Image (cartoon, rainbow, N blue to C red; front, side, top):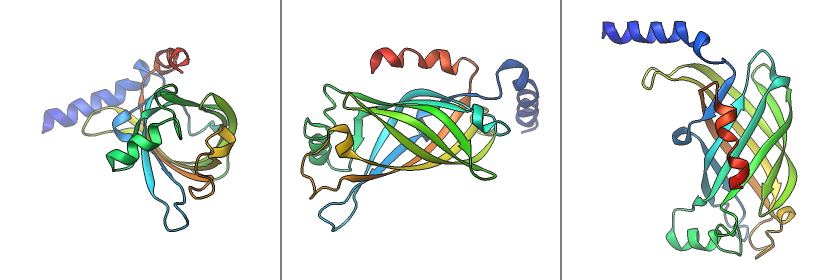
Length: 203
């Protein structure tokens, strides 16, 4: 136990010299994109998507300098039912066979509160790019005592109209407005932006 505490202390003390305090790569295990949409007004079923790769550039003392890029894996779509998964991955909705990823790229970030802000950016989905604003809460940053990774955590929400991206099947029975909830963790990594560059070719 003593050795573990010593190791954590040493890693925490030496980390600033090893990597930039503001560069993070997404932790795919602890990063999820949830979305919900009206089903005939009866309910708003939720689906889940995974972030494939990307980076976060963030310093809590310099919000306007923040940047984020995220590549979302549309083939990972999960509605909790195999038939519905296939339906939503098909050409009628996400067209995941031809468009296996979507991508969000920030254009600017503004701070709106002590731990909150808005990320203005561009979302590319189904080959169509539209502006999307994401309301973000910075939860905390610090050493993960289990993985020993320096980690930053965020929660975020956004809304968009699927018809803006050409996804018009079954309107209005399946709602147009999509509510998005994101939980994200970034692992500090000074080469995060460089590692994310290949995503441009994938998209």
